Image (cartoon, rainbow, N blue to C red; front, side):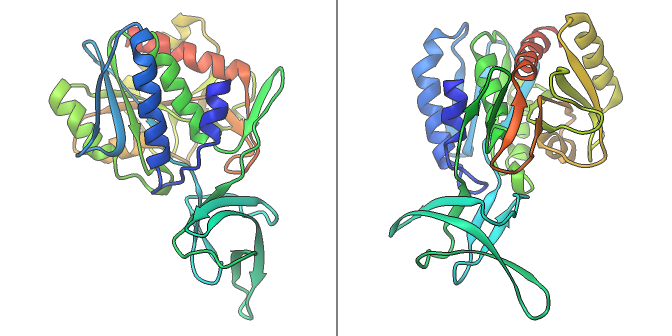
Length: 306
């Protein structure tokens, strides 16, 4: 879990993914020679903060987003949300501006019209500074817990799959937490260059009344987006044949890079597959280790058999 711990401590809210990109590039270049297949690596000009790895003769792509929720400092130390972070008073936020390190608690105030404003104390912070939750990685026999399991765990899963992957594509995308924007051009690249048109979304879902800890990775039949049912049925049939623990998710809210693929002009099939977490978008996101294990096993299996 050391790699996951490191990923969770990287401060990279939407719009500030460069720290994650630089870390991943260093990690890939340092480790790819020990992987079963050394991938072709695409990044930089034309890819912005995204990274694409191409292994062998691909037929399926994995998408994992690099960004997380957070806050942007506005004026007079007021802050505005990036994505949908928890706004519980007292949460410790951290960041950096030209004057140095920032570590302050989130506070609330209400104006005369009843409108709630979020702000931090301390010295005046430069406007436009990004703030994230202060990381506190915890591990027990059964669970791992920290901020940004969503989606550092999805990225970790993709990196673990990369170790054994012979044929496939891994796309590390950006900006998912505030509406997307990178998936369209990544889809264009892999569809036009490699004719790949099916995808798995390596992201983390939520514990609900129908999706529980320690019951296996969740295969989502739908969320706010509805993928093509024939593709979902293929995945469910393969999952049953795999004997890997899994559970089926049906929701009407939420979404990830799959929704952006569905809105693209390319004929992609997609399926969201991820371990469930509790305490979503807080500093205390919690995932069961057995669900993490089944997630990686399922991706290994599907990337061979889809």
